[in-house]
Image 1 (cartoon, rainbow, N blue to C red):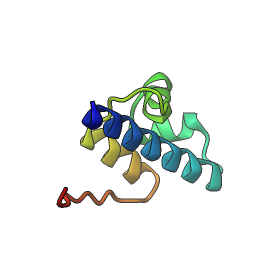
Image 2 (image 1 turned 45 degrees about the horizontal axis):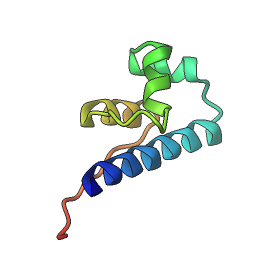
Image 3 (image 1 turned 90 degrees about the vertical axis):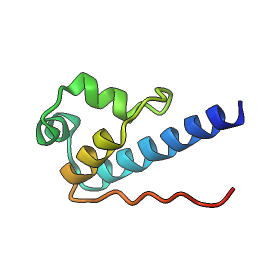
Image 4 (image 1 turned 135 degrees about the vertical axis):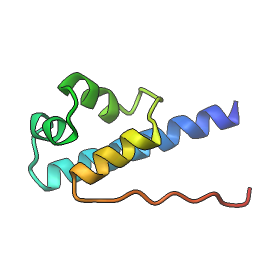
Length: 77
């Protein structure tokens, strides 16, 4: 159960970070969805902190659409 809880927390943190960038740069969700070549509904799922599923590819696509890149690390437990 700890791993599942950690996964939810990571998704929530990522969603909030993406939302913050979108707000800071005054980018509409429609504009971001267009940049990502995805639907607005799909973008809403990405930005929904309560939806746990998010692939690394989708995260990278969202980051690139915002002029960012993703950096992941595997750390000792």
